[in-house]
Length: 149
Image (cartoon, rainbow, N blue to C red; front, side, top):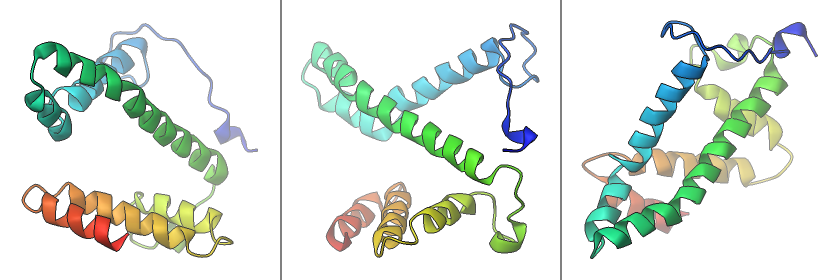
């Protein structure tokens, strides 16, 4: 393990917004993250509007909260695993001119290369989810994704 993989955890109360990973920047960022997940997310708003009463809308929010937190935790764990696996390595020759977002696909193909069909299923699900969020054609892409997968 190289020295770049050892990240010290510093609990800083510095209110400077230009400093990364302080108590205040993570707190304010977390508030905006939760606001985006529960306040303006299309699926959540549809869930609120389809509820008969306000109490039912609040209950639906409490019911979906653990699942969204699980998805967020799995995303964080995947990022940590990718960081620990490829820390200190330069992959610009393998990725070419692609952005750093291609590291997710590279990680999946690298880790699951021995399991036939699973990397392709992951990529199909990833593209289906990406196409689902197209604002104008989300219903059609969701339907195709469900039928094809």
